[in-house]
Image 1 (tube, rainbow, N blue to C red):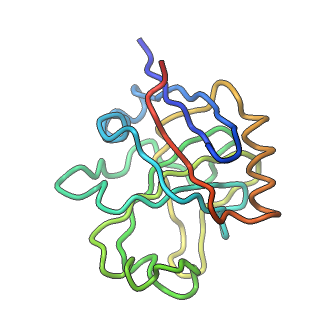
Image 2: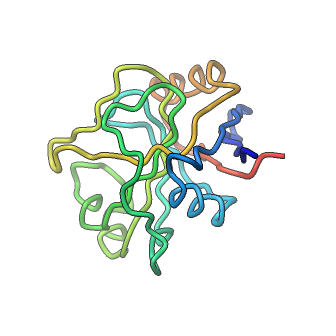
Length: 168
Protein backbone atom coordinates (compact mmCIF):
# COMPACT_ATOMS: atom_id res chain seq x y z
CA UNK A 1 0.00 0.00 0.00
CA UNK A 2 1.44 3.35 -1.03
CA UNK A 3 2.15 6.10 1.46
CA UNK A 4 1.52 9.75 0.62
CA UNK A 5 2.82 13.07 1.87
CA UNK A 6 1.52 16.61 1.57
CA UNK A 7 3.84 19.33 0.32
CA UNK A 8 2.66 22.85 1.12
CA UNK A 9 3.47 26.52 1.03
CA UNK A 10 1.20 27.48 3.96
CA UNK A 11 1.61 31.23 3.58
CA UNK A 12 0.48 30.94 -0.05
CA UNK A 13 -2.41 28.59 0.76
CA UNK A 14 -1.13 25.94 -1.68
CA UNK A 15 -0.60 22.23 -1.16
CA UNK A 16 0.03 19.16 -3.28
CA UNK A 17 0.00 15.42 -2.67
CA UNK A 18 2.92 13.10 -3.44
CA UNK A 19 3.25 9.32 -3.51
CA UNK A 20 6.34 7.92 -1.81
CA UNK A 21 8.45 5.80 -4.21
CA UNK A 22 9.21 3.09 -1.67
CA UNK A 23 10.17 0.43 -4.22
CA UNK A 24 12.74 2.67 -5.91
CA UNK A 25 14.05 4.58 -2.86
CA UNK A 26 13.23 2.61 0.31
CA UNK A 27 15.99 4.09 2.50
CA UNK A 28 15.23 7.67 1.52
CA UNK A 29 11.48 7.16 1.93
CA UNK A 30 12.03 5.70 5.39
CA UNK A 31 14.31 8.56 6.43
CA UNK A 32 11.76 11.16 5.30
CA UNK A 33 8.67 9.35 6.62
CA UNK A 34 10.20 8.75 10.05
CA UNK A 35 11.17 12.44 10.37
CA UNK A 36 7.84 13.97 9.28
CA UNK A 37 6.59 16.62 9.75
CA UNK A 38 9.45 18.66 8.29
CA UNK A 39 9.76 22.18 7.06
CA UNK A 40 11.56 25.46 7.00
CA UNK A 41 12.22 28.60 5.02
CA UNK A 42 11.57 27.98 1.34
CA UNK A 43 14.26 28.83 -1.20
CA UNK A 44 14.03 28.89 -4.98
CA UNK A 45 16.72 27.11 -6.97
CA UNK A 46 19.54 29.24 -8.29
CA UNK A 47 21.23 26.64 -10.46
CA UNK A 48 18.70 23.83 -11.01
CA UNK A 49 15.97 26.01 -12.58
CA UNK A 50 12.40 25.02 -11.56
CA UNK A 51 13.04 23.98 -7.96
CA UNK A 52 11.97 25.01 -4.48
CA UNK A 53 13.53 23.53 -1.37
CA UNK A 54 14.01 23.73 2.38
CA UNK A 55 17.31 23.21 4.23
CA UNK A 56 17.08 20.85 7.21
CA UNK A 57 20.26 20.78 9.32
CA UNK A 58 20.91 17.57 11.24
CA UNK A 59 18.32 15.40 9.47
CA UNK A 60 21.01 13.10 8.04
CA UNK A 61 23.10 12.93 11.21
CA UNK A 62 23.38 9.84 13.44
CA UNK A 63 23.42 7.41 10.54
CA UNK A 64 20.11 8.58 9.06
CA UNK A 65 21.59 9.56 5.69
CA UNK A 66 20.21 7.04 3.17
CA UNK A 67 23.15 7.36 0.78
CA UNK A 68 22.51 7.49 -2.93
CA UNK A 69 19.54 5.63 -4.37
CA UNK A 70 17.23 6.29 -7.32
CA UNK A 71 19.40 9.27 -8.23
CA UNK A 72 18.98 11.73 -11.05
CA UNK A 73 20.60 14.89 -12.37
CA UNK A 74 17.59 15.65 -14.58
CA UNK A 75 14.51 15.70 -12.31
CA UNK A 76 11.12 16.04 -13.98
CA UNK A 77 8.09 18.07 -12.88
CA UNK A 78 6.65 16.59 -9.72
CA UNK A 79 9.85 14.91 -8.48
CA UNK A 80 10.74 15.28 -4.80
CA UNK A 81 14.45 14.84 -4.10
CA UNK A 82 16.77 14.45 -1.11
CA UNK A 83 20.27 15.94 -1.18
CA UNK A 84 22.82 15.77 1.63
CA UNK A 85 25.39 18.55 1.93
CA UNK A 86 27.91 19.60 4.53
CA UNK A 87 27.88 23.07 6.00
CA UNK A 88 31.08 23.73 4.08
CA UNK A 89 29.28 22.92 0.82
CA UNK A 90 26.55 25.53 1.38
CA UNK A 91 28.12 28.05 3.73
CA UNK A 92 29.86 30.16 1.11
CA UNK A 93 28.84 33.64 -0.10
CA UNK A 94 28.10 32.26 -3.58
CA UNK A 95 24.90 30.67 -2.27
CA UNK A 96 23.62 33.83 -0.61
CA UNK A 97 22.14 32.26 2.52
CA UNK A 98 21.96 34.91 5.23
CA UNK A 99 22.95 32.36 7.86
CA UNK A 100 26.08 31.37 5.94
CA UNK A 101 28.30 31.50 9.01
CA UNK A 102 25.92 29.19 10.87
CA UNK A 103 25.68 26.79 7.94
CA UNK A 104 29.46 26.33 7.89
CA UNK A 105 29.28 25.15 11.49
CA UNK A 106 26.62 22.49 10.76
CA UNK A 107 27.44 18.80 10.37
CA UNK A 108 25.10 17.78 7.57
CA UNK A 109 22.31 19.68 5.88
CA UNK A 110 19.53 17.94 4.00
CA UNK A 111 17.97 19.79 1.10
CA UNK A 112 14.44 18.48 0.44
CA UNK A 113 13.47 19.75 -2.99
CA UNK A 114 10.36 19.89 -5.14
CA UNK A 115 10.73 20.25 -8.90
CA UNK A 116 7.78 21.96 -10.55
CA UNK A 117 8.78 22.47 -14.18
CA UNK A 118 10.80 20.99 -17.03
CA UNK A 119 14.43 21.38 -18.12
CA UNK A 120 16.14 20.98 -14.74
CA UNK A 121 19.81 20.10 -14.66
CA UNK A 122 21.54 19.40 -11.36
CA UNK A 123 24.96 20.86 -11.99
CA UNK A 124 26.53 23.75 -10.16
CA UNK A 125 29.64 25.77 -10.77
CA UNK A 126 31.23 25.04 -7.40
CA UNK A 127 30.54 21.33 -7.11
CA UNK A 128 29.80 19.94 -10.57
CA UNK A 129 27.08 17.31 -10.86
CA UNK A 130 24.80 17.09 -7.82
CA UNK A 131 22.65 13.94 -8.07
CA UNK A 132 19.55 13.80 -5.90
CA UNK A 133 17.55 10.86 -4.57
CA UNK A 134 14.06 10.89 -6.11
CA UNK A 135 11.86 9.65 -3.25
CA UNK A 136 8.34 10.82 -4.16
CA UNK A 137 6.27 12.07 -7.07
CA UNK A 138 3.45 14.61 -7.01
CA UNK A 139 0.11 13.05 -7.92
CA UNK A 140 -2.21 16.01 -7.23
CA UNK A 141 -1.80 19.78 -7.18
CA UNK A 142 1.25 20.24 -9.42
CA UNK A 143 -0.28 23.04 -11.50
CA UNK A 144 -1.30 25.11 -8.48
CA UNK A 145 2.05 24.52 -6.76
CA UNK A 146 3.93 25.44 -9.96
CA UNK A 147 2.04 28.74 -10.20
CA UNK A 148 2.91 29.55 -6.58
CA UNK A 149 6.55 28.60 -7.19
CA UNK A 150 6.71 30.90 -10.19
CA UNK A 151 5.39 33.70 -7.96
CA UNK A 152 8.18 32.93 -5.47
CA UNK A 153 10.74 33.14 -8.28
CA UNK A 154 9.50 36.53 -9.43
CA UNK A 155 8.43 38.00 -6.08
CA UNK A 156 10.81 36.51 -3.52
CA UNK A 157 10.70 33.88 -0.80
CA UNK A 158 11.04 35.93 2.40
CA UNK A 159 8.57 34.84 5.04
CA UNK A 160 7.39 31.76 3.14
CA UNK A 161 7.88 28.22 4.41
CA UNK A 162 7.89 24.81 2.72
CA UNK A 163 6.26 21.97 4.68
CA UNK A 164 6.30 18.20 4.26
CA UNK A 165 3.73 16.20 6.26
CA UNK A 166 2.11 12.78 6.23
CA UNK A 167 -1.05 12.82 4.14
CA UNK A 168 -4.25 11.31 5.42
